[in-house]
Image 1 (tube, rainbow, N blue to C red):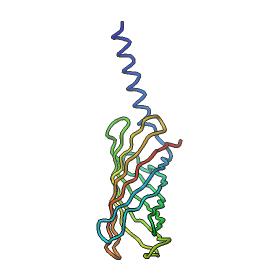
Image 2: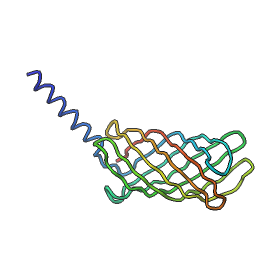
Image 3: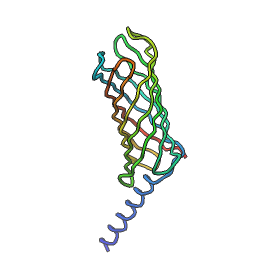
Image 4: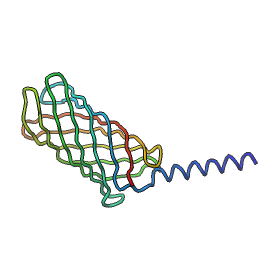
Length: 164
């Protein structure tokens, strides 16, 4: 009897996990912290926040993400927007992996390098759904600015919310 109750509980927990990861969301909202570390091109580390929205026009094939990030350090403030095209893979009922690429437009608001620049951005995106509509994400990335060869590594970490 106890074994039967235990196995029913396990099946119920598995079904709940399936529901949390398999839920189709019209939009996924990402809110988190961001960091950027230069590889080539000078400058210091930048930290700030990021907000993004993601949609899935073709299930299991295509995800589109638009985001805005504000970064700053002493003497330098930057606002950037990106548009990423991603290929999703479901690793488990509650875990997704995506890789993607796209353009990024950055505007340096203060500091010695004021101005606007374009760059190419490449990311890996891991999403972990803990509930049906709530989870967390980890998004490491690399960007390069063709104009001046500046390269940097980035990392965004935060919460995800699935909107119906």
